[in-house]
Image (cartoon, rainbow, N blue to C red; front, side, top):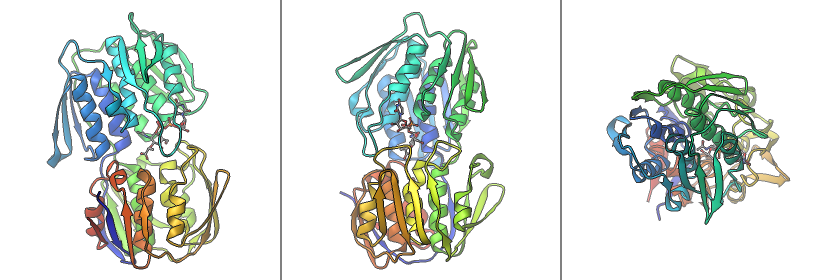
Length: 419
Ligand code: EPZ
């Protein structure tokens, strides 16, 4: 099994280009079932995208990935396609459950594997099913599969989500885009990836309005749909490299291929810690700061601080002065990176849902184990700032969501290699 070897303490210089967003491409690929023809640009060439494409192929869509250009072309001309999403594909990539909304609203039925457990939490799909039932679907769980039916199509209604879920909002949007009449979704997730999906669905002919956390979908007659769409940049990848730059930039690092306007935050956490950044039209310049300040933060739905940057932020805070606190409020088991960081010398205590990080602490290289996508990249960041060598095992987690990570870091003079 492949490993990463990192020789730490190398100052970084140069430029890093951000790839397309994994968490925007996945729901848009599920939405492509609703179109006749799609050309999707700026897609990240990561494992989860390839798994979703495999699922679309399995369902019967024609797909072609033009790797050199990060483009995928999709055709769905067939009258009848398979409305089954098998366990073997959904188990490795939970976002596979997003084809449920598209299949149900277009073909009136779907059989989709329940995603099953995940390292970071139980991650049920009850809110997805709640929304589809409200739209009139008959839903049964049988042999580990969701059996959904809407013989006479779905019917628009008001859905008030009891808690905020990115995936449930996306599945409800996909299903409602072809439901009869008007649908109002309340207490929705409003991540930039949701907005990107809405732009795509509008190109498909739907009328969709967002106001605060309320999304209104008006059904329109969907004609022959041949659309081109450019996926937004990956704001979590951006956050990851901003943290790497703040820790290791020789002087400054420029991170480009982004749209700074898209990523407004309630609180500018990185600036509060003391990260100096300068925004430009489509890039951002990060300067190193040797005197990082401690902070107390909780992970929240957008525009709060994202749970997908929690592990990376924790590594940064091992170098901040004082005791920082991070409360993980989205997933119940997302501190798997802590024991590994402690093996590298980090001083971190967990009480209930909060991590107490004491800094600044000198980290030293060690052999560590990746457990999930974001935990694995936090170990890469720790390896980059640690004395000596770090060996990271199970890096298949990393390949699920980071495109060309070694190449991007090597271009900035990091000493990192895959064996
Ligand atoms: C999306 O997952 C992202 N994945 C996750 O990124 C991200 O961490 C998460 O949103 C939160 O921002 C993709 O977009 C593909 P949720 P999702 O539904 O949709 C509970 C990464 O690292 N919940 O917003 O699965 C759930 O258990 C990944 O790229 C229910 O209880 O997240 C969690 O505690 C990891 N019932 C909370 O809500 C439901 O039906 C938020 O989950 C659905 C969710």
